[in-house]
Image 1 (cartoon, rainbow, N blue to C red):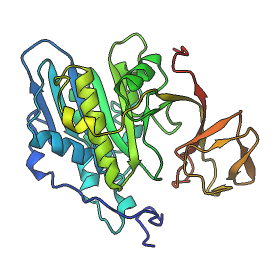
Image 2 (spheres, rainbow, N blue to C red; image 1 turned 135 degrees about the horizontal axis):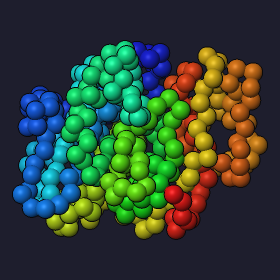
Image 3 (tube, one colour; image 1 turned 90 degrees about the vertical axis):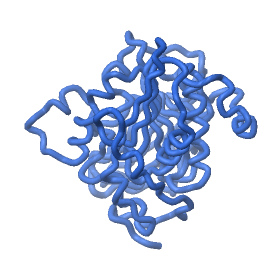
Image 4 (cartoon, rainbow, N blue to C red; image 1 turned 30 degrees about the vertical axis):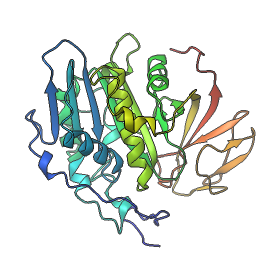
Length: 331
């Protein structure tokens, strides 16, 4: 197996190629690679973003597909944004895990005061986050498209609030909805500002469309984008009806609440087994070791969400979750 710039061996074949995005470089908002179209009719500003991580190609393919179709909003505004282009331009199918970011994780920069902190070390991701900030602050509803390290079923990250859970269930697929508080390392874009305010109507979802480089991840990304745009009336209900009639239908969402992330403390974190995600384990099952400290499943059942291969101090090794009734209330 070929190694990557992150020191991780490649476990999966790279089935999809990086799309050519040069045609979108100019944008039409004054921000490179950010496109906004205004219907001239009252309605929300709906946005779909891709490439928050430069090696997650499915969202780029979905946005390229929508742009090639010249999709325009029937009401409100509609934006398509290719985010961490600098990392994407480093993508190499021989080392596909090596272009997740240039300097740091773009999706941990969105906490209060981070972007306004002038003493913070300037990185490519910080520069780009500051560049898109004025645009992001105008977005009412955001779909942020991602993919995962392991080949497991796709899932929606709905955040900690009931409004995120309800939106995720409304725009499914995918059928798995994960409600969580994020990562100790920093705040995600989907939790930024009003998206994370229970009193604000603004809302956001993050979708994990399957393994990074599997062909099906691009199809799931397209499905989610179509359903998201339909849900908010940016496109007619019959938009892509023929395509969607051939795609899997979710009759009922399966919702999980994350009890907490396991944040790596030492340089010697190792899993007890080759966990891949959605394992349903009994309370007390040995999950792994962080240095000399054993890590056990904390509740019955314990569902593993997105076990990571990036087992460095400060990173999330895995999230522990338990299933809940979609009707259950929370903040």
